[in-house]
Image (cartoon, rainbow, N blue to C red; front, side, top):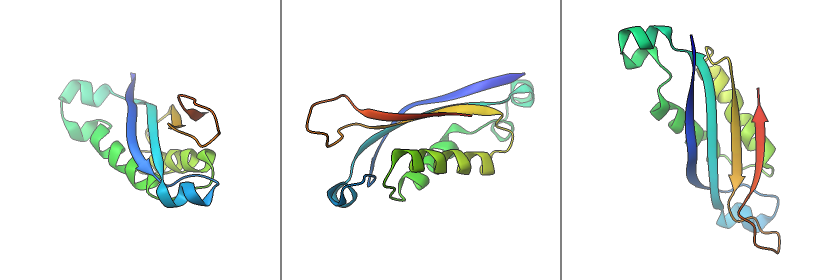
Length: 117
């Protein structure tokens, strides 16, 4: 049986952006992920070691977000690569990385990249 764990709108301060000022001052980002993985053993045993521990996933995302990138695509792809390396049983997923207040001269709720795999 395949289950999906979702982490919705993890808010972090990070230093991603093309402009030098963005990389110095930083911005607020939101990361949402959906991760598909086999849940049979976890459902049967009720043991955390048999599941995809969302607290550990959040720590991995925080670690990857701490490394500055010029592009959202780079930061999101690094997160996916790290997740797949750390949790090879993930069979697919989706990540949405949003820059909450992009410096684009107009007010927008945010600008996002979405990756599906």
